[in-house]
Length: 439
Ligand SMILES: NC(=O)C1=CN([C@@H]2O[C@H](COP(=O)(O)OP(=O)(O)OC[C@H]3O[C@@H](n4cnc5c(N)ncnc54)[C@H](OP(=O)(O)O)[C@@H]3O)[C@@H](O)[C@H]2O)C=CC1
Ligand SMILES: O=C(O)CCC(=O)C(=O)O
Image 1: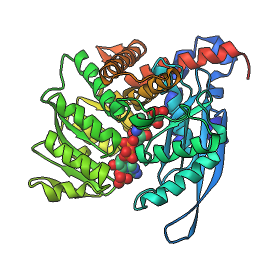
Image 2: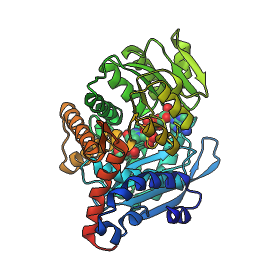
Image 3: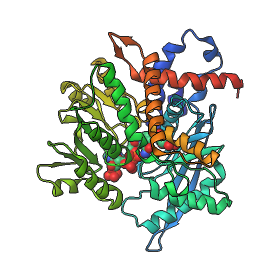
Image 4: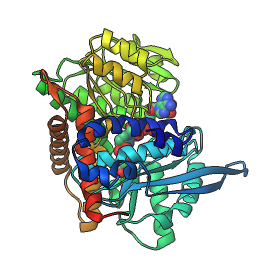
């Protein structure tokens, strides 16, 4: 780890992600000489390549704006680079390197032939007009298009990149190359998108939770759940939970969180979806619309008493103190819809207290899995029915859950899902790299 820190100065998120995976892998590979001799761990922690570029665009007042763009192509041992694009002011090379590193293991866990990558920009879509977002996306793709392709690297959405942005990006790729091909996933159904991709990450995380609870002889019905975020992952996790009879108490955005002690029901969730997806409004407006709902400005929901916690906003949103609150409240499980939402110290607190922690690389893998299925549909020039994809997603999540159980030590029936996901994800990539020799 000293070498990783030295080679990546100031890249705290990346070092955090490598440390978290390495802790589990070190002990597992101790007696496996082939991985040591081939320096597999060190090679996996060095991205294949990082492309960085300037993105210039013109705002509605005719000012020239300059942003940074990146694509981190982390590892393509088991398939073309695959992973989302994030547009958010907090995006740095370190953030994208950690996300691409995590994505490599996540994609391996899906069992599909997908390598790991991630990209994005510090561009902030909040408060921008549709035309401004369009001009930015077109400029971003004008720089990116020569580095991607359906067999090379297939980006998708992430924070700040939803179906509107994917439309603009795909349109520009098609215009520049004169080719219609499955170069992006998360496309709308009208032009080659897959049914269920929008719902897949949130629904998949809830499927994962179902399996975690099943091992404890428990079910989702009647459980209270605190969720952070009010974006794609949070809203679809809430939707599936409500469908299965859980009581969803909270949602949040970067302004604070709402707490609805009666629980968010189907009708209220529809209202929130219109607010967040169509009107691009703030979650505080929910508390203005419905009586009995509290809005906590700048706060996070982790102190609200509940059975389950699902962080679905961003990285490092649960720190040591929040983890202690969750332990005090006897939370049964923390299921990560977001990528690395739990700090290293918080993971330690939860691990010590034997609170089940389902890591993002396993629990939120449903999104990229359905992206993989979108790629298959595009290659075959067909579109599968929603029901078939729903079944496939449920089966994939069960399979990922079982791989975590297989490799996560079970002690008094307690599964270390973090360890299980790290080892199962690593093994497939490492074995492929061994097969290729030194490169
Ligand atoms: N979309 C997908 O398919 C997948 C997403 N993920 C992960 O899930 C998480 C959420 O992604 P997604 O739902 O797609 O993104 P969205 O952009 O749709 O939503 C993000 C939500 O999180 C909030 N948020 C973002 N950054 C912060 C922050 N720094 N502090 C507080 N709140 C914040 C946003 O609030 P605001 O609007 O105020 O910014 C918004 O409510 C990310 O970690 C992402 O990497 C993982 C797998 C797949
Ligand atoms: O669907 C995809 O390709 C990527 C999803 C993603 O970015 C993620 O899993 O974090």
